[in-house]
Length: 239
Image (cartoon, rainbow, N blue to C red; front, top):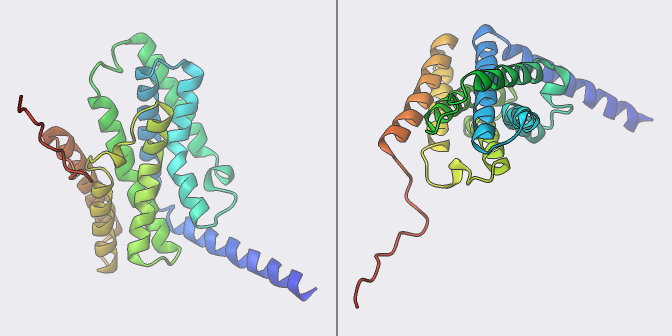
């Protein structure tokens, strides 16, 4: 009997803690980040689906998976069940609505998904920037130490992109030397530092988002890569 009451009390404390956590992340800048990140990753999902020659249903499913994938991983790691989008369905609606609008745009302008990958990378960088900071804030509010909060934020940010790349049979960009997770780590660490120093929330959020986005776009433009695990061996040209 006592054991049952103990479990019930534990569940109530867990629910109250998560309500407080989500309330803390529902201030204006974090709501904006969540919407921007969801839309950006949904757009990147549709563009990736178009490049992979998927049909409309496949594109919508991929866009949804990309938009909510990182947050789902985050909630599972924190033991938050049901995951956020099952309790607050707006991310699903925003992701699907954005995907449908993008599909209509691609029908009107069939070259909009472009033979170049730049629009996909821009949308992906925007989603990464938004979700890394949202995830880091949720980690801090869940009383994780700063290092783990940043790691949680990075997992939130890169999760959707990994799902997109795997479902379109591409190597995940986070694993092939691109400056991707590193950009998230830099921005997440900057966000934590400013937060610990008591800097205004708006400044913390937007400078960190801008840092991640700029690092990622500069890395794309200048073709910055991390060193490979195994250095390339020089070809033997001897006859």
